[in-house]
Length: 141
Image (cartoon, rainbow, N blue to C red; front, top):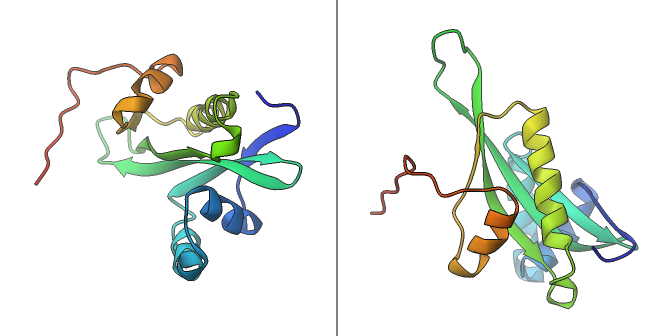
């Protein structure tokens, strides 16, 4: 990974930085900020910080599952997005973001973490420990 990069949970001060990494323009920043603020309990941002500048962001969505026998609390996660600024790609930053996100998933006791990947990123997620699963099905309208 690029020297000087720190990966950590993102906070309110990081919103403009990760908005920029995601390609959110100035005209959309207020609505993006409102969305991020409204979803702090379920959508956890992780940022890659290089000298005080956000150069990457990954999102972990945490959701509750229906309780089961002997398991009143059941939660899972979903990787919502992993973005690294074009100038900093292919340097291990995305992998460090996923590692931090998965460490948080373990700490939260999540049952599993899913990801809906674009074709180009499948190998990235496989290297991070994700697998194809025969029981995961998808319905699209």
